[in-house]
Amino acid sequence: MEIKINHTNSLSAARYFSSFGIQNFGFTLDSMNPNHISLLDAKQIVSWLYQPNIILEVGIFQNIEEIEILQKEFHFSSVELNIHHPDFKRIIEQYNQSWIRLNVDELQQIDFNGPIF
Image (cartoon, rainbow, N blue to C red):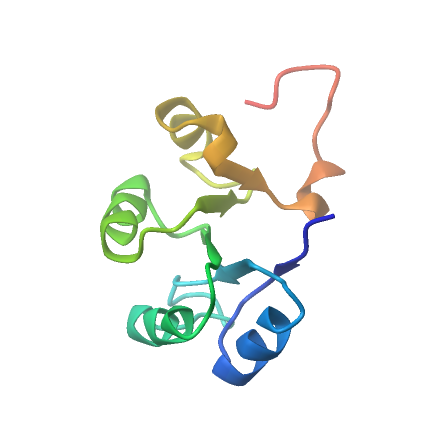
């Protein structure tokens, strides 16, 4: 079982969870989200963790160009995407789908009998 810590914004909490072997840490870098963290603070937290899987929690207001810039700056392992994101289809088509995670809370809103686009 994999565990992911959402909205990582505290070094103390991240180190605490890391001590239990948790390696998946989500960072919200969308300044419009109340759970956001600055890129600099996120980088500082990551530098204290042992082999973390960095997951970018993409906000609804972040476009694909911003995601690409953040990838160059932050080198995250995957992107967690809201199915209601305006660029959802474009992001799915452009990137390796194994690189994209959907929020479990969002799955109840998908009609699995038809296409999700």
